[in-house]
Length: 246
Image 1 (cartoon, helix red, strand yellow):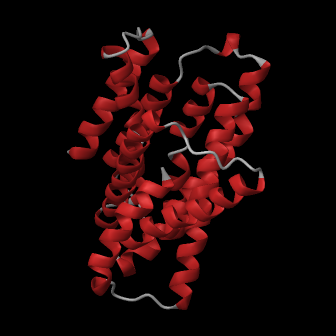
Image 2 (tube, rainbow, N blue to C red):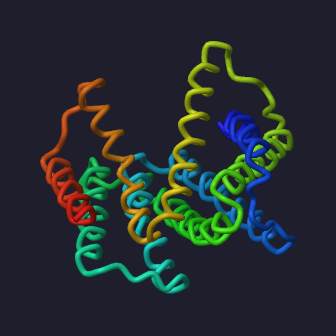
């Protein structure tokens, strides 16, 4: 995924490099730090999937959108209006409801194991969002997202080599990996453009609606049934988006 994104965004970067407003040493260091935080966010997210359960980890990660919201209020001094605050709350709560497929009574020991990595993932992603906004305001949205993909290739590639896990995926899988890499890169590029044009505290909850897309596709394509609380979550997100739009 990182490799495909690095190639695509690398081409865009070289096409737009002349439009970079300023890229001094301090900005480069800030970009590298933000990229490291993002890669760590990915790592702990998938580690949480490995040792925990998908429903719990995805719920905490989706609800983790509140982390960049709080960070933006404290560090960037971005204060939304009252109606925006209400919309943020409705979207965040709705996303958590949609993501969570279980109940508190049936949480297993394995589910609990995934909580800590999911919390770390939310903190790393939240910190990344604040730093990448500061960087992208100077460089534009393409370059910092490209650096993240390049950092991912280097760090994950080094880890795979160290663990002697350098086998390539089977050929039939590559078409899916290419699609995943393109979608992931374009999603992060769109997100970075969004936080440059609007408040982080508004864009972050909206971006967490990817969970709704996943659940909706699972419902219509995989014929997975929705629980009642997931339906309530959909309505909560819908009203939240309408509130933010108004």
